[in-house]
Image (cartoon, rainbow, N blue to C red; front, side):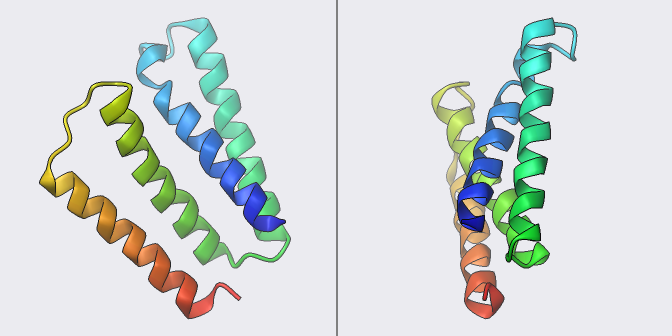
Length: 107
């Protein structure tokens, strides 16, 4: 069950980050509110996952790393941000690091 909350934390963090540009520096009300609420829910879900079994280092690495990989994909697909070889390599390295962390101590 903690992994379900961790995945929810990742999803809400990606939603909040995806909306940052739309907030226009927190001057637009609706995107700002949704962005901030998304971050609050993300942190609450992450806290719940850590409270109920996941080591904080592994949980945070997964939350930050998979969120980073997802936001690169969201940026490329929906925000029309350029993607290049270096970004792809960076995402692969981040995911590789998460795998190594999980192999070395998730349980």
